Length: 282
Image (tube, rainbow, N blue to C red; front, top):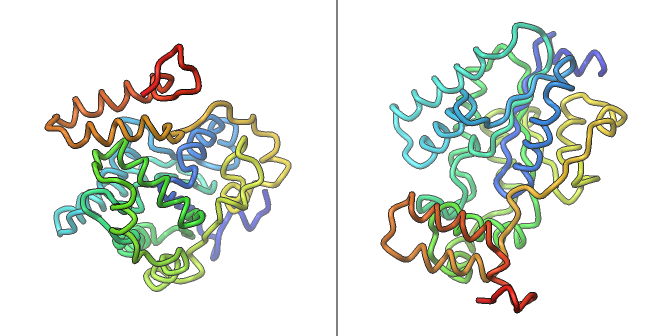
C-alpha cells in the first residue's frame, strides 16, 4: 500500500464510505470484506453491517432519517455515526465503512419513488461529523433497466411491496440517471469526495468490490491474494417465487408472519419451478 493511500490529504486518516447502493452486489461485497477483515487488518480497517453492532444502528438511523427527516431523526443519525467512529482503533490505518442503508430509502420502500433524495443531506452530515478524516463517498451503479427490475424483486421479498412490476415501473419512470445522483452528491460534499463505480466494470464476481478495494489502497496483487467468495449473496428469487410473495404481501399479515413466509419461500424455491415436475410446480 502506497504512502498516499495510508494517509489522505493533509496527512489526515482516510475514511471511505461505501454507500451501496441497494442491488449493486453490496451484500456480496460486504461478505467478502467481512471474511477478509482480519487478513486486511494491518492495512485497512473494515466495518460492515454486523447485527447488534454500531454499524447496524447506523444503517437503521440513516434509513429512519431518510423516510422521516426531522431534528430527532437527524440527532439519532449523528449519534449512531459517532458511535461507529468512536469504535475505530486508534491508529492511522485507512477505514472502509460499507452499508447500503446509509444511502437511505430506495425507490419502493416506505412510499419513496425518487432516487435517494436524502443521500446528499446524509453525506453532508457525515462529512461534518467526520471532518478530521480525509473522506470519500463511494457508490456503485448498474444499468437502470436491470437495476429497477432487481430492486422491485427485492422490495417485494423484503419490504412487503405488493404491486406488479408494471406499476413499480410507472411509479419510478421519472427516475433520473446515476449521473444526477452523483451531481447532487457533489453539490453537497464536493466533487472530489464522490466516487462512482459501475458494477459492470467489476473484474470478478468471485472477488466482489475490486474497484472499491483498489480505491481503498490495495494493490491488484493484494486483492488477488484474497480468497474467492463462494456461494450466492442475496440472489434474486425465481419469478414464480417472487410472484407468490407479492400475492402474500396483499394479505392482512403482520410483518413478522410475512417475513417468515418470505423466508420459507426463499428456502424452498424448487416448489416454484416447472424444471423438475416431480418436485412440484406453481
